[in-house]
Length: 194
Image (cartoon, rainbow, N blue to C red; front, side, top):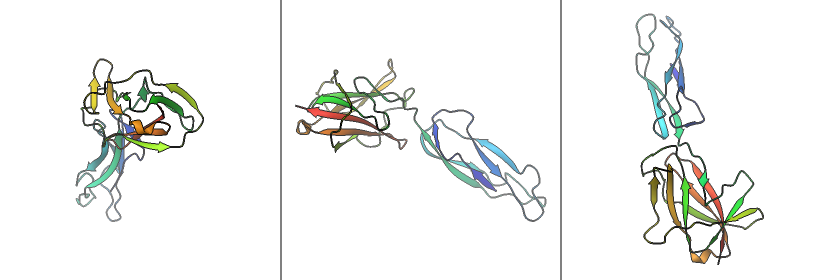
């Protein structure tokens, strides 16, 4: 018996997602259906395992099949960054211009509250060469009091990560990489000024 899960990313809370199974027997033959489907749970993100229990299929002399499993990947319903940060699309980079040393509210939605443990580590900055492209000054800043961290605004259905830039980045460009618990990474591009 084999069980096959979808190979691509599956959005969280998608209904009707299935794994397909097939049963074969080289001896007496399969007693009953030789294929079918099982529904997959997409309510939790990350790598998930679907299992068809032992005995789900039988041959004509009463021997049951062994348990079989397959893995699938469920991801958050990411909708991009919200103002004041502009999103880039493919190779079309939009540079968000910010004074180095300011705290920037990084806002995004995951289609509803997902708890506060949504990040895989702290978002990271990778300094990159400054290239041509559209640019837009950041016009909203967060308080610099306290530490960077994640908050959730239930009214706007947005997560807000207060990102503190470093004064030493002035004159450089960088991409902010936000990696989520589902294993996906999302980038926003910045040009740091004095």
